[in-house]
Length: 112
Ligand SMILES: [Zn+2]
Figure 1 (cartoon, rainbow, N blue to C red):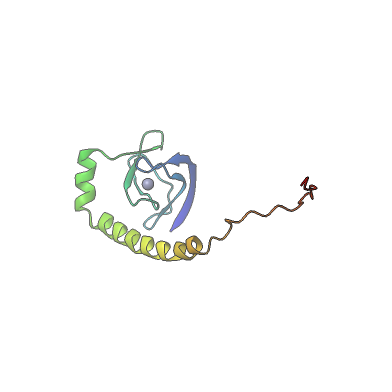
Figure 2 (cartoon, rainbow, N blue to C red):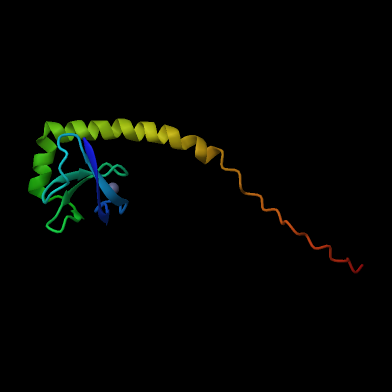
């Protein structure tokens, strides 16, 4: 398993920035027609001729839907998403920067 730095692209579904690809099965970099599962939204993308991500065609979706490898990858993503959501939760609830304090309070004389 090797992670390859790819050129910066966006998931065709959610727009999440993608700049690397990891394959469980090969150490080769991604090639034309290879599938990519977006870690952000869990949707499938396909590397096009310029190795940019695009939405799969209907035919490709049929293959994805019946591929045990794709189903396994999606199941792993679901586990990952559950774990990630659990990790993210505390940072949301502990956010405590709502109060703004001015450092240099000028002491204007009150003209009363
Ligand atoms: Zn996405």
